[in-house]
Length: 229
Image (tube, rainbow, N blue to C red; front, top):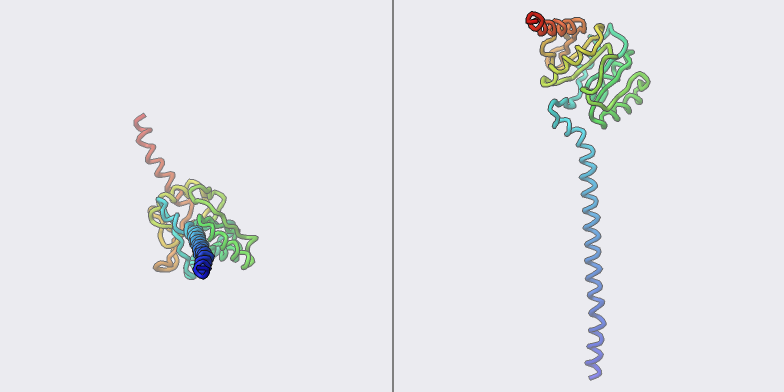
């Protein structure tokens, strides 16, 4: 009988210990699951933070996607502006290569870009290339910026935005300004010069010409009203 009692006592002592080991295993598994979930969630947040500036512009009504300028395009832009000086703005400056190249040629160059990652990278590149004093980059929507202070404008646009941009630039730029369009020309302006071919073609427009066209168009619209009165 004593032997039986001892066996029962040993069993009763062993049972809680086994239960405790199982609980510890479940607790470790739970902690591991929480760690994995946290890492996965953090990775998704980081991925969204990096990708969102590239994806969200595509959801806008008029999208200006980031497509890096080719070496030939940069050379063509600088070629048609070789006799120019003063201030220059690149609308949708991307990774800053046009602005940096223009700053090296003596322009006081600025870039406007919606993607903050590209703006920060452009600023770093300008510092590394030694032109941070003659260049600047801004996180801004081009439709909310006035370009009246610039005498040279470079734009890598898309067809959906060019007609609206015509009106904006014609109303804001000084008569001495030049506008260089890359990849797509403006729909109604007449270029005074072109350079390159294919996707590397650039079109040069004189502000005096397109501002005059705008004034003539406004005059035509008001003429019937004046005749009626």
